[in-house]
Image (cartoon, each protein chain N blue to C red):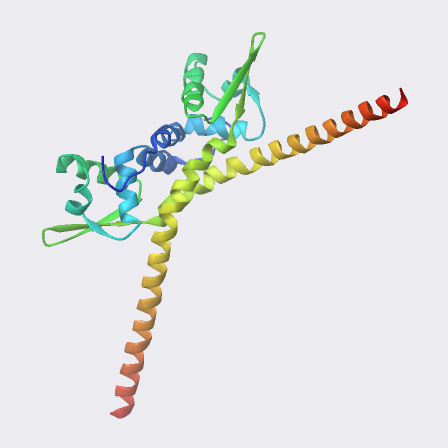
Length: 125
Length: 125
């Protein structure tokens, strides 16, 4: 096990679930409200078993839950299940961006210093 | 093509690149600063070609860039490349959470109303 990793097993499933346009499209639809499997399948040129398989991947990642009443299965988005993904990305972006900002500020100060030196050299000629 | 999707081809690659603990560990290391391929490989019990392959997946997603000087290849994180992933998740979470908040407020108001009705019925006895 690498020494600087944390045990983020579910992140594999969350990111894998989101790495597919069809599944993201289902999440986009469910962000607007619950929907039946038939409704979710409608915009796709896809067999119902494939739709159900995609929903299974989303359910195993905890992003979607479903309940069956009679013959109708209704799916619902679990927005909080996406939080670990946003949090992880945020933890990487922030220090990296701060480091780049500091580097940018340093380079800008350096350019100003070099320009100033060049100007005073020019004036002394 | 489903009617409510947007052409987010690169999101597939970004999310796929992040759906692996080894690759996320490499990103975590690079968030602290640039590193050579050998440095990145160190904490893993993994052959160098596998490390290079993982880095290739991160590079094809635009998350990592690398430059070779002499025999040393140095890798660097591109934090801005992660922005589309955070943005997409944010766009789904916000409306879904607002909807749940509204539902919560409605249910709370309903509970209060029912409790008030029950109390006044009790008093009238």
